[in-house]
Length: 375
Image (cartoon, rainbow, N blue to C red; front, side, top):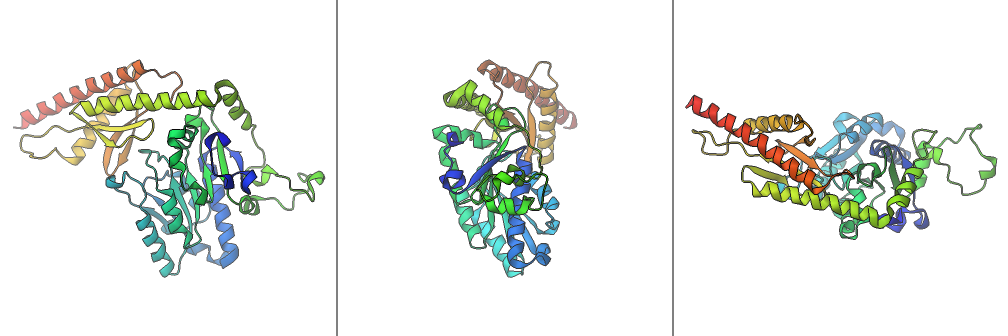
C-alpha cells in the first residue's frame, strides 16, 4: 500500500514483500516463527529453550500468546516496564541492558515486538533507537502498528514511521481505523524468504503448480499459518474505490479532531485529568478522587481506581449513551474514549462528555457524603 508511504525495502519493488492476514495476532505469530527458525538454523534446534523475546508492559497480550505457541519459555519473555515520563514508550536503554544481560547469561535474544500506537494509550515506541539496540544481537524487530498504522495515510503522521525501514517486519489493521471490515491485516517483511522458509510447504504434491516451477512466483499459502485464504484484498480495494485517499485522510483527521475536542473538555474540568498525552483519536482520562477530610493528598490510590470503575459502569449503562472502555496504566484505572466510527459527529462527542460529567458529579457527591458520615 503505497498510500501509507512505507519504506521501499518492505515492498516487492524493494526486495521485500507483503501479504494480507486475518489479524495482528497472526502477523506476530508468523514473524516470530520465522525469526525462531532462522535463529535455530544458526545455533541448533536444541537451544530453543535459550531463546528470549522482548516487549514493553504496554505491548498487546497477543504477543505473549504468540510466544507460547512458538515454544518460547514463559520465563524467557521479557516485559520491560515503561514510565509516564516517557509517555509509556519502550526505553532503548532498558532494552539494550536487558538484551546484554541475557546474552551474558548464555541466553539468545531473538525477537522484539515494538509498537506504534499501543492498545492502552496509543504510545509510540522509538523504533529507530530500538532497532539500533536490537541489531547488536541480531534480533528480529517486528513493528505492531495495528491501530495507528492507518494514520500513515496522512502526511502529518508519517514521521511516526521513521525508522521502520530498519525493522524486519510491520503489520497494521485497516479494520481498526481505515474503514475496512474485519478481518484485514497487511504484513510487510524486509526478507519474505525467512517467512516462506518457516511456513512453506515444500513437499506438497496436490497444491504444487507445475507452471510455477523454475519461476519467481509468490505462493501465498507459504506466507501464513493457514493454507486457505479469504479474498481480503477486495475489502481494501472497495474502501479505496469508495473513499479514495483523500476521503480516508478526511476520516482520520475528523476522528483526531473530535478526540482533541474531547480532550480539551476533560482538561477544562478540574474534577478530571488526562492520564496520557493524546496522539491520535484516543483520550485516556479519569475522575480525580475527592480529598478525604483527614487526607492531605488526593485520596487513596485504590479508592481512585474504584470510583473510576463505577464511572465507567455508569457511563456505559446510560441509555443511548456512549460506550467507553478501560485500561490500567501505571497502576491507574483509566477510561478510554476512542473516536473511530464513520457515523460519529461532533455532537456525539459533546453528548458523551455531558454523560461523563453527570455521572462523575454524582459519584463525587456520594463519596463526599460517605466522608462526612465518617467524620
